[in-house]
Image 1: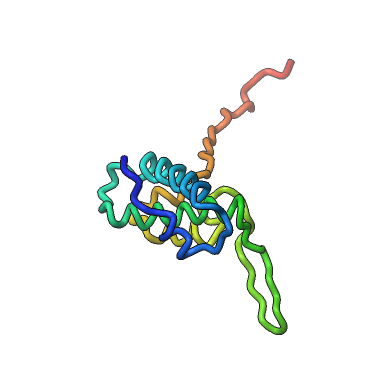
Image 2 (image 1 turned 90 degrees about the horizontal axis):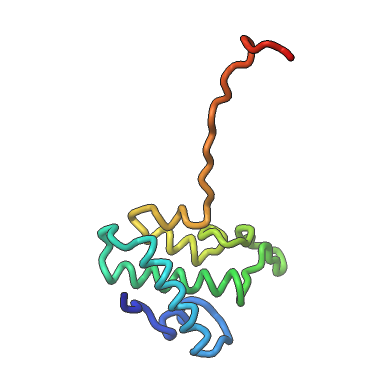
Length: 127
């Protein structure tokens, strides 16, 4: 599918010294992710473009422009989520999740857990 955002829009929301070509490569990756996760979810192209922009910023934030976990200047302090690859690990990813009305983006990077019950061993003979 066509790329829905551009370098100018991404650089408007995240401060980075990355060159245009490098930001564009992140946009391509974000586009691939958005297409694979949100295709067929009934979201408009405009909304997918907004999500793609924020996902791009998230990818940059967790690799090239890491957000600090804690920042203090004088009496003011800020804390950020622990960094990782899950979408919640940056404010940009959190914003992308907020725009995703399908809820699927929030599940990216999370593992499924399967729990199986073990049958009782009470009736088993002890060897």
